[in-house]
Length: 239
Image (tube, rainbow, N blue to C red; front, side, top):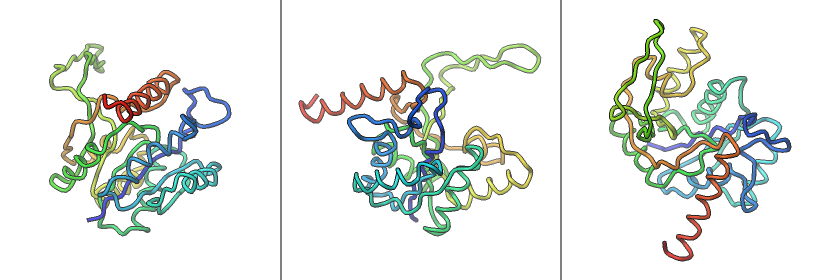
């Protein structure tokens, strides 16, 4: 069974408030965020290929960066859609057309560059055993959920997780869910695990690193920069 990363880099980054570049193309140490993310899958021995969903106008720039950083596993770059859900669908179709339907797909955000090799490995092991795998982190604060009647539901913290990415599925399963969503005209699923749960799939979770943040705001970028410096120091000084 092939393992294909489908990396979503189609957002414009309004909350980042950048003017010249979308957030996935912001650079740290002369390397774009999206390249940091792609390299995680490029360097993993069990990843067989990569599909990137990109803003159409930035596809030529991305191709240049892939060449510059000697990325070889990207088999397809496809334009995004009108919504995040449609963009992921475009990536899944490209994965099927390029690699065949008998694949596991690891759906990941282009602006989540702080996962680990172990996170990818754990996702692959879990999808092979259970059929899907959602990367989560434990909650460190209390959730308060508004109910329709105006009351509050406060689930126990020990039972709560925060879903992040990668979110990993067997390609035929996630494609079938997307096709059904398109058939009924539902295009507002916030992420893939929400869609799969809606259509009756039992969701399996694995725990990933707490630093697996999505770079959405300037503060997130500062955290990313600090974590890169920590990793570099670990390599140089051994701590």
